[in-house]
Image (cartoon, rainbow, N blue to C red; front, side, top):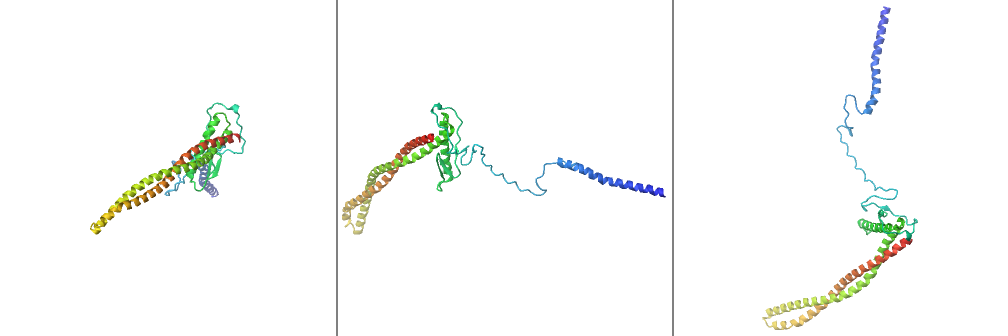
Length: 311
């Protein structure tokens, strides 16, 4: 009996060890296979598809559109195209930085050079060469952008010309900025100075011509109106008195017509003179003002360029 019990006890411990080995082995296998499955992104016996971006049965909201990228600015201050200036620009040179002088012996015939980028003004600023000022409230942004773009491109073109003949770039920047600012200043001064006497002369001439035309027109209107009024008066008197008062009414027509015509001529001359003076002043001022602006712009540009060349 003792031997039998010992054999049965040993068999029980063997079954217990065998039964315990199953879960222990499963734990070891899962521990080794689990990380590998996580690395491969799938499960044994299951085909891995595209990674899911949401939960089954739930619609994920569409991602927000990316914010617009800011214009790229490199170390040289070059900025890509913007809505205000649809081309590459560069930052404004430091006006206090030293610039090499122009050496006449180093000048040469025009050569091909790398184009100068237009200068980018500060935000909400109007820049015309050396003339820089905050944008006034009455000037809309689109118009200010056009002014800045036109002035910047003109300035860059002038700098290109000076660079092509051997002027150092920093010096050509100052010459170009001074030229543009001087041209605008000279044009304004010259235009106003020439427009005033032109407007006075044009107004005087226009007043004479307009008064003559107005007098003729007034006479025509006065004669026609007097004849119509006199005829109507005679017919009315004849009908009212049986023809007795028709002759005096008709006889009074020239007298009435003379007074009416004179009044119409005077009124026409006054109206024509005023209108002619206004039109003459506008025409005279525009013609002489344009000429003065052109001359003043050339002179001002030369002065501004000379100042920029020697500053």
